Length: 87
Image (cartoon, rainbow, N blue to C red; front, side, top):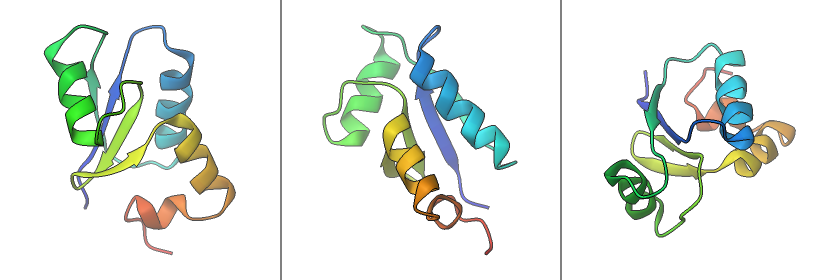
């Protein structure tokens, strides 16, 4: 199974939406609390290539992006494959 990580911030509606989408896929993932100004937020930014927003989602270390990116992949029918789910 791929390693899925998502950096989030408490109270962030986009984070909540992205986490709910991942939960709906029944995949195991690690949610990393990354409020603004924390080392975790800096790590998310570095790993994503400079994006300072949350959520930031990674699959096996590869950035998938934020909430809008996950939702776009879902609409295009590509999220399952991106998450390493069997077709």
